[in-house]
Image (cartoon, rainbow, N blue to C red):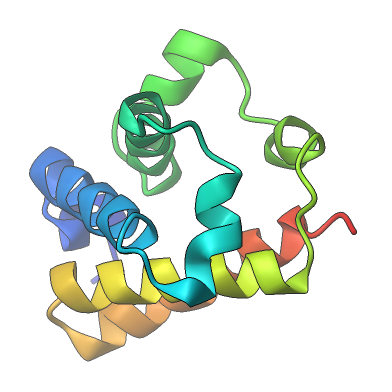
Length: 126
């Protein structure tokens, strides 16, 4: 049996729940994520939509991000931001909270965490 990440998240509703939990964690006021939060607009609506679209396609679901914006070019799109190790760690802190809230199966949670960590590592540009 092969692993289907999109299905493991619960399809569209699960991806939306993951993204909402991620941005809720970022918007929590925790000092550890304050610098990351400051990199975003006061209104997170657009950021939530973009991450939802990206994660949908990235997990094997509909390619919503590509349909709207073209190839993600993640590192290039994030280059205007000072993404250092602390920012990466703050991003992963929010993603860990989201994964814990949304992904029940510990093995699946670990699978997602490993892959999100690789993406976060790739974004470091300072």
